[in-house]
Image 1 (spheres, rainbow, N blue to C red):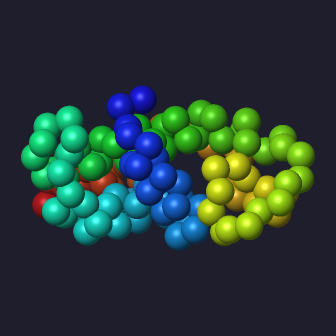
Image 2 (image 1 turned 180 degrees about the vertical axis):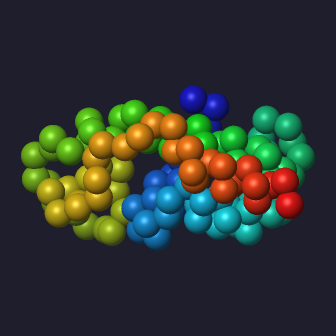
Length: 111
């Protein structure tokens, strides 16, 4: 998918614990990854790279979210886990294009 496990972990925490959408996740990652090195380029992340990763994550997330809703109840010892539980009230059907949110991210980069 072009994302490391540590990146996916950070996306998941921002998505589930912080309840971030595409724009707020992009803004958080701009701050969090300011000094972080991109393993692919060995240079600091640029805003465009972060935006592309956030967009890619949310496309995959929206395509596959419905698959996470049919799980048997299980024990959850921490507030973030890779699987959802039955008390997760987030929607599970998304418009894959995220037109408005991605447009806001693009405008933010242009400024």
